[in-house]
Length: 138
Ligand code: HEM
Image 1: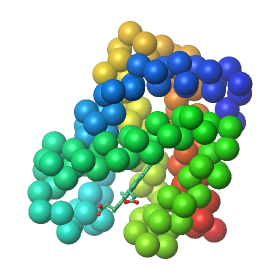
Image 2 (image 1 turned 90 degrees about the vertical axis):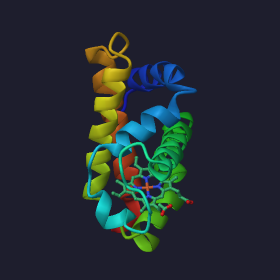
Image 3 (image 1 turned 135 degrees about the horizontal axis):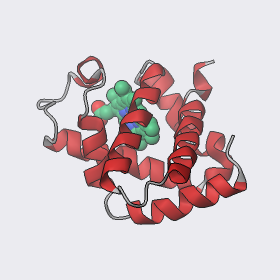
Image 4 (image 1 turned 120 degrees about the vertical axis):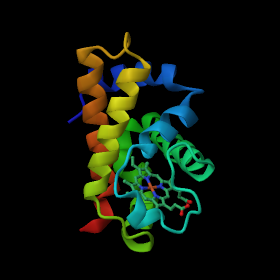
């Protein structure tokens, strides 16, 4: 789980993400991941399309919000977990895929800041986010 040190590393790194959520989120959700299954109601599913870009920004805003509530991720993400479990019915395996996509995009967007230490802390954080989002599936 996340140590106090990990939490500090995540929060410090996330200060660099601030203001770039839309680009990063767009890139992360543009990377193919079962998109057709859940987003078939969108007119344009191509990477970087308007709805994909908008959704990337939405997801990233939620992740940024989670960074600010890092001490209570389960509580912070409970209503989103409910939404994905009962309304959207997203297979929770996809949370891991998106977490991985985000790691890839963050590492390539911030090659100098993405040290091995940051990598481990962000990985742990995104795993905790995925777990919190899976809370209502049980
Ligand atoms: C919608 C967050 C992962 C599928 C949303 C919304 C947020 C969000 C904030 C908008 C909720 C609202 O309108 O009230 C997240 C976060 C994720 C995540 C933080 C992981 C870090 C995923 C994954 C999938 C998914 C992996 C499916 C592969 C959807 C769908 C919608 C949605 C289908 C509705 C989109 C629409 O039609 O507008 N998500 N999500 N989410 N999410 Fe996620």
